[in-house]
Length: 356
Image (cartoon, rainbow, N blue to C red; front, side, top):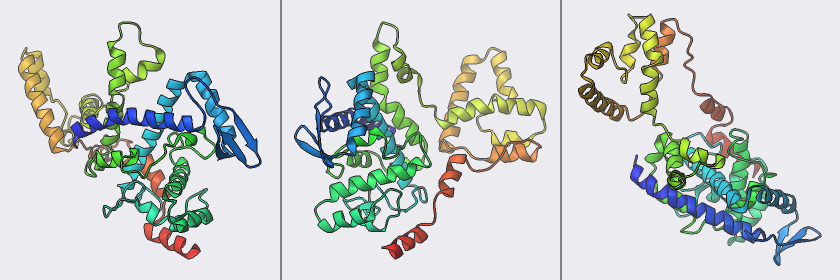
């Protein structure tokens, strides 16, 4: 994983997302120092002389109340991270076969084409709240790809709300109003996300953790530089740090793993615990060889982490079960949920084409 590239991209992305949602708020008449009035006429709402569907008025009101309650800057910061989080999640899922029900890429194209794959197959999609008649109308127009893509992306978020409601919202949520504009431009937020990380990086789920840590890094540094007490709202920036998988393994194997081995001296679980510090290592520490021990153990841990690719296995839990434990070896709940909500790519495409 190219951490240096991610470390450069994520802080810049934070600024870009904040700027993008702020511009979008301005389009809706929401500014740091004022709120433009809304004039409704039939099904049209006029804001700053621009027409919008009246359906956005209640959501705009909710957004305005949030700005009044939390402040403009704080609201834009929150909305920026909301959309960054959603984009990162979709990028991860589109590169893992079967995680998106339709099987198409939302942000990129497997053949390297400039337009996202989902746009190419828009009329074959079967997404909740997606108006296929509107999809066909926009696609037939030939010059309204930006509108069509926005429609598809919001529909994708609605479908993912069933699986990840804490990340994705329904269409009755005010966050949809601040979905940034110009998403198909060559320098769009989506293009930057795809260009600044390789597909190889996204094979590991740890990319999500690293992106979050790098995203908040500049804010963390700013908060840490203060000489006064840290405000409550800023505590997450200095305390929510990503812990790589190998460190978690190290902690678990030398706590729970050690207890297991103490109670079952003949257990073969030790063979599946590459980060475990054995009794001989403990003896070295007790005999005063602390500095030499720590250096050697750190080198050994680094070699193990590298050889394991920072990935864990289910081998420990399999071994615990075979020795009379109660740890389950099922797939993680999140993976099970995703797979329970999807059908095969071939079946979904076939169904969509038949309905079309």
